[in-house]
Each structure stands twice: as structure tokens, then as C-alpha cells.
Image (cartoon, rainbow, N blue to C red; front, top):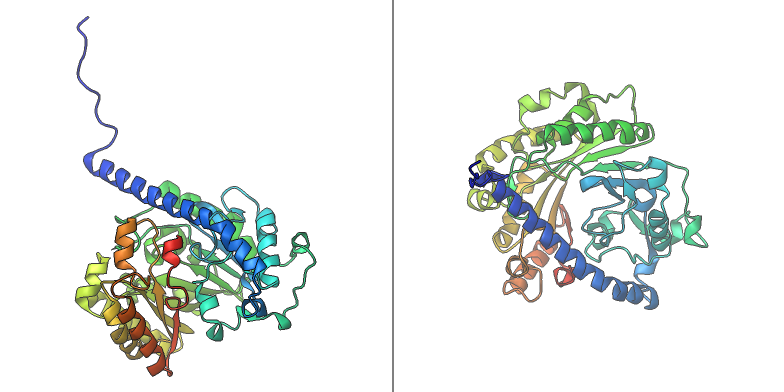
Length: 403
């Protein structure tokens, strides 16, 4: 029989192969970040425990006692994954029971540490630690705390979380340069898996939950998030409110009408924008248009003015492309009547090489634009006492060196 020398077809199309390679590069950069963080972990812990940090020891964070975050792949923490040391997770929402997660050894160790004011597992650039004065419901004096444990094994809680943040669906309609290399849409199989977990793990906890937050991707691009929210109602969960993080591109009056049965449950709307002009916005948030953002922000602003939502905030990840627009961003906030403006330091979620990050992160004190960016933000905070400004850019000038 004649031998067949025809090579087999490639396992991927050219487009699929490019996406696959891009995903591998993102993972490799995250592994590099994790490795560098682990190398620093021991020194950080020793320094925090054995130095007499009198200022830090005055405070306690309530989130390990009141909050669950279900992140990518189902990993559970109590706060933003970029604010807690890598690897310190409580369990996996897809595999573990709620009881095993809520009182795992890792969460009990975290509760014990913050109850002593040590914060060994936390990064200094945590937005709540950096802005204690406007987050007094989260970070408050230890002297007022009811939590006082002899050892970490005592930190078992019989309560359920007051706040649950769901961050496990990365689906998004934009390709922001700070976040990802391509548009991400969860498959039908993945969406169904997420929805099953939400119904099985999260829904039983909502009786005592006060705030259910959706972030990590785009709420209005996530089929699982939207379907789950539509399944909830005020009669069954009278105390429950929603917070959503959105880029506002899909937040239209027509989309809002789809949630008419839940309107009185939407409480906090947080808009990620990162710019104050059409040119910069469309260079950073690829796939979005400034015109659509502006139109939708007028609508969202009207919801706030009519008290149909309780809080409206806008956020701005500061980088070399946009730092000169920080002042104008404050004015955008005023025009839209927001309750809070957030300036966030650039964090590498796998989109940057080491050299690219050093160039883009203007709040790294080795960056050529560091002094200018720092002075702009200091002046903004000094000149705008009438608006709430939250930032984590000025407290720790070198944290991206550690990551």
C-alpha cells in the first residue's frame, strides 16, 4: 500500500493558534509575577511581624469577616486578587463546599492577622488601606473591634458573608490594553458551569447577604451574571442589593429595561473609563467609542439624580498614555454627578512584559514621568475637597517592582 505522506491538518486555525499563543504568554507573565512575589513573601512577613508598625497595628479590616470574592477559576478570597498575596486563597467555589471555604485554615489565618493589625497577607497598595478615611466601614480602629483571638485556630465564624463579589466570568466586549490581549467571551459550557455554581453555592448565602457585586469582566457581556440576577427578586431577598462594574458601552436604556423586575435592587454602579477624551479613551479601551460612553453616562447619571441607584463611581487606571488627563477626569465626574472618583495604579494582569510595565507605570518612582504624575495627583486631591477621591497610587512607589 502506498504510504501517505500528507501531513495531518493543524489542530488550530491560524486565528485560534494566535489566540492560544497569546493566552500562553499571558499565563507565563502571571507565573513570572507569582514567582517574584513568592520570593518577596518571606521578607515581607518577617518585616511586618517583627517591626513595631504602630500606625498599622491601630487598624483592623472587616472584609475577612464579612466578604467573599469568587475569582477566576473559582478561587475564593476576601478581597481583590491583586491586593492579597499570591496563593493565599480559601478554596474553590466549583469544587468545595461553602462551609469548607468560609472557615478554611487560610481564611482563619487572615482573620487572625488583621485582628492583630499585622496585615501580613496584604499589599500596601490596597485601596482600602490607602484610603482609611473614606472607608471607615471596612478599615476601622482595632480598639472598637469585637474580634480578639488567642490563636488563629479560634477564628471560626458561624455567620455568613454580608458581601459577595463574583469575579469568575472574564467575558467582556472590550479589549483594554491594561487587561487583556483579545476580546474574551465565555463559551456556552463555561457560562452554564458558572451559572450552576452561582445557584448552588452563592444563592443559598443570599438570605443574609447585603451586597452582591459583579466584576472581573463586563456584567452586560456575561450571560451567566445577567441570567442569575434576573432569577433574584426583592420578595425573596428583601435585604439584598447589587453592585456592578461596567464599562457602560452596553448600559443603554433598552438594556436597563430588561432588568425592570430588579430595578430596586441595583444600588451601586461603578464605571471603568480610564480617560477624559475620545482619543485617549479609544486608544486604551479598544472596541469602545467615546460617543457611546458619553451617551450612556448621561443616562446612568440620570438614574443617580433620580435616586434609582444609590451610588455612582468612575475609575481611572493611571498610565503613561492618560496621566495628564487626571484633572479633566475629575471634571467628567462633576458633570456626571458621581459620588466617587477612583485613581488606580496600574497592575500587571498579564498584558505587559516587564519592560512594558516599567514604561507604562508612571507611579513607579523610576519612571521618567513619575514626578509629574505624582504632583498632578497631589494637586488634584488638594484642590478638590468637594468630591470623594480614592487612590492607591501615592502610598507605595515601587510595588510593581515587587510583583
